[in-house]
Amino acid sequence: MSTLAHTMMTAARSTDSGLAGPGELDRYPFGEAPVAERVGAPVWESAEPELGRVGRRTAGSRGRGLHGQLVQQLGQMIVSGDLGADRPLVPEEIGQRFEVSRTVVRESLRVLEAKGLVSARPNVGTRVRPVSDWNLLDPDIIEWRAFGPQRDDQRRELNELRWTIEPLAARLAAGHGRADIQQRMSDMVEIMAHAMGQGDALTYSRADAEFHSLLIQVAGNRMLEHLSGIVSSALQVSGGPATGCDRPNDASLGHHGRIADALAAGDGTAAETAMRALLTVHPEVERVVPAPREH
Image 1 (cartoon, helix red, strand yellow):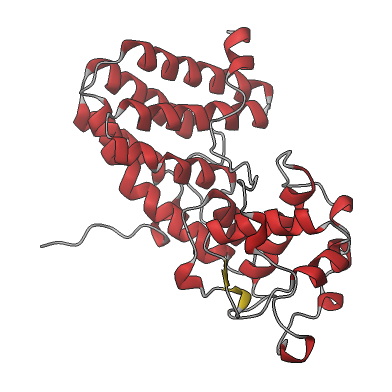
Image 2 (cartoon, rainbow, N blue to C red):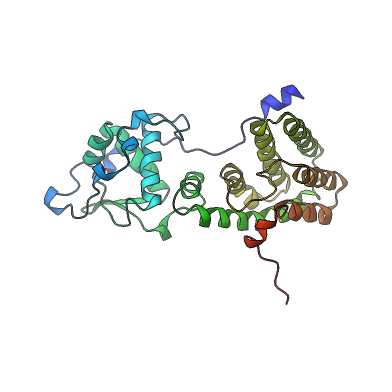
């Protein structure tokens, strides 16, 4: 069990390498617009002091280097509203403000464009896009929203999505008979029980994330599997309106065990019921997920 506990510590999570492809760096020319035309350009000096130099802040960079840290900081500023929609982002000003090279700025803007946060057009330059254009299912944007001014909305929306995705995944998973994955899910429950007894919240949360990832994987629906990142992100940013996965306790552990048992028995209805019970194990979640309407 100890070997398994070590091997499952890091839950799967897709990350963008952020590296520009051949010829792509020129998409962000530094002479985007004459200085006189830069109306409404961001006043970088008004940003929080700790954002002054990329190298000073490593939290959340996920090992992506300087450009990953710059993506993190610019993304947080856009999502928080510090850089509002249609604001111009002039690369040389960003480079000076954060003390990074032109290549780092270009790579960072490329990643932000892929997330729908900015757009780069000839004769217009690089500008912040409205919220309606953002890829709200992107794990980074989920995280930035969850720890910014929109935290309550983000956590509520994540919980609503989990309520939609996971009970269905539990029902489907019971019909696929993947004994290897079902055994691994049972192992995760054992790890969670041991971690809870030891007061090891980190191991508990990682086993929990692995459990839910495996559940969606064994459901056998590729479109649901594509949405597994939402569940992983929800577990990582849990807080505010709570579910049974963000407070280790006997009730939560029991529901996880019942899900695993139902899958082993091929009982889709029991698996779905146990998942719904898990997601509503705390009273306050009733404000997040309303009861089904009577027809």
